[in-house]
Length: 252
Image (cartoon, rainbow, N blue to C red; front, side, top):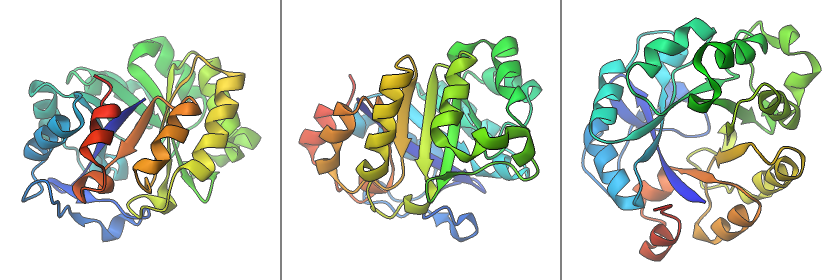
């Protein structure tokens, strides 16, 4: 298991995501670095956790009001392995993002027009550079407005959505509980049971989780459950993780 720093981009800044209330997001205030410049913070975060992986959410692109393609290209050029959620709606949007050199494009159910896009994406881009992104609110999946009927009963269950993704060949999933993002409310209570079910039913699916890591004491249980990556932002910026934990979970 490794720690994956998160960069949420909004209006040119890295912002502090809190409880999924995006209209209230403001530029990050960090103990690690003054300012909210994406390039500078990415370098600091990669050095801190000891690996090049970055989970990046382009919140403007997700909302359909422009993109941070230039900043994302710079993160890649600087050596970042960027796992990007740009708010994919249809499969034909994927190639332009892959052309930037990102490691993986996240297909977020919050944005997808429907389940058919998953299969179309695998057919057009291949599975290795794709992941499904599943945002939850109170353990309930968030789906794009108007897509609920297309997902049907599958759309009500995180486990069934992950089963669907694994079934079409997507090798990785990123699951985030938005209600606890940035709050330190803890991950293990919901993530460990979900991870154990995934491990038992479709062990080929690599699972990353996020949503308010309470502290380093949660990390061993998350690793034991089979989770491969833990998204972290606030815990890093507020220096809540010891150097020993950073070394242990660097994933070098």
